[in-house]
Length: 252
Image 1 (cartoon, one colour):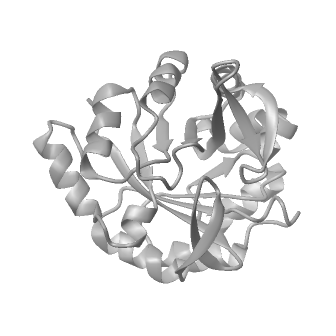
Image 2: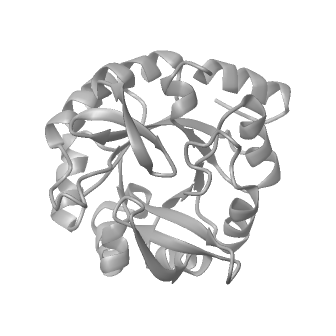
């Protein structure tokens, strides 16, 4: 078993880290540079930085904040938000990102995935997929624009398509679980793990130590992302890693 990754996420809007529930009612958590430095100290395996208002505000990711964060951390950094071109990807990599996440732009122009992968390598291109369960069709659908716009794209088939286009990793957020602390959507990640053969990061719902072991032991995911439990000090990275070791999950 490859070592599993524990990944805090900074959702940034207006230059500040925010957190909400089900992608709404955002509250201010703090300064992204200070919070990133704290996660570096705690031993996070990676850090994901998402400029969550960039797409809706039709602007690019805040390069200056990315540069400041990249100076504070030595772990791999994935940056996303407002990325619409190969040039945007290049700027973020130059600013200190190791990987770039694309979401809405991948839906609008799937060829951007291929172009980015060809120029920078598949390992640099992360496709972020925000999904919600539709009770009527009993399927998961993709949402764009920070979770505000529903598409008619079924999520599992979309995951297969973006991997075929060149995505080296998937960051999949279960919007129904986001911020609820009720646990990851195990069923979703089981289906994804069977559908694709690239690393998957599970996001949405982490609330207690057992949630992390559940998703790693029951689904084929490589990383587990959390925000609220780390931002508010309810759990530390070390708490999670120590617990996972006890459960027989290999961590770094």
